[in-house]
Amino acid sequence: MGITSSSNSPRDQFLSKEVGYTSKQHLKKSFIEEINKELDVLFAPKREESFVDRDTEADARYSEFMKGGPCKESFTAMEKCVKESGVPSGKCNEPLIMFLECVSSHPDYYHPFLAVVKSAIEHGHKEVQALNAMKQALKDDALAARNQSFRDKEFRRF
Image (cartoon, rainbow, N blue to C red):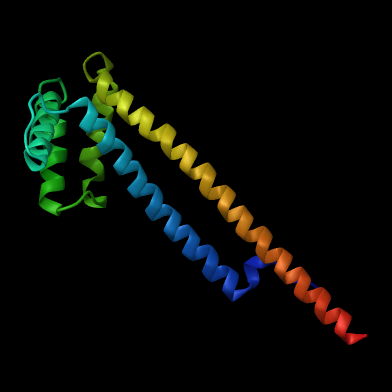
């Protein structure tokens, strides 16, 4: 009787799915937080106001910047889709792709925004590497525990 692979164990399958789900949610949240943090710095309000007013003003400055460039129509379409759906969702993929393609084709105007996206992507790569290391450590620990359990069972047989 051989040792089964970790992917065959129901517990390991659950753990793999749970860690995978959690890591995807974590990465998405982390990516959005990183972009928002960088955009807040880039489009910070000019005057001191309450926190809520500062957020509103930063959003307004961001929107004004985006609409001031050659991608006004694609930005407006994406913004409308997000507002209608309540949150960014799969329904908004087409307007988002059109907007990003437009922005990418006009780096002369949108370079501050593109720098924010590049920074968030680099941050995301680091997060992926950390999560992959965590997953590997979990697999290694599970395998070591399984091997120890197997050795204990074999030892008791004699």
